[in-house]
Image (cartoon, rainbow over all chains, first blue to last red; front, side):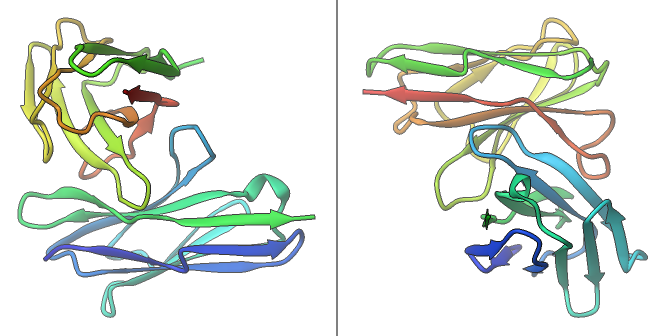
Length: 112
Length: 114
């Protein structure tokens, strides 16, 4: 079954600290992997999109990595800010019908 | 500024009533989508449209209907046949096939049915 699992479910960190969010998937065949940021009560916003051949991609303080062999991705946030408090959603494109499979998200709270 | 506008932000309805959620985009995207978001679950696709006057069912289309009469607009009707309509509804668009292009989301409509 094509699935996307994220960990942890939720995370609390202090402002200025770094953190890493994990995404494991079982989607096959694989097309690409995306990370989205969703503020409370708003729509998701795209952070990165990576294909099979890309190991790492950065967007400001956000760096995503992809290991297509182990089917794992991580999102690293550097020097966290209060505005980073949000849900981070991992999405994998693939499967027999090349659809988007959404993870349930990691809820990050950055405290002062 | 280009983007997707969903309205209203909050919607309250009585059980048994149909309700229509609005979605308008000015990004000139061909493809538009409706997703449903429930607590603890990943987004689920309701309907999508890749071109005007054409649309396809997603994974959870039962109890919903859509139309695509204009490129900019993709309204979703939640009918009384939808068993559990209370949810956060997200409209999205993409420049190309969603499998390869990033989705641009609106800020959602929270529907509560009592």
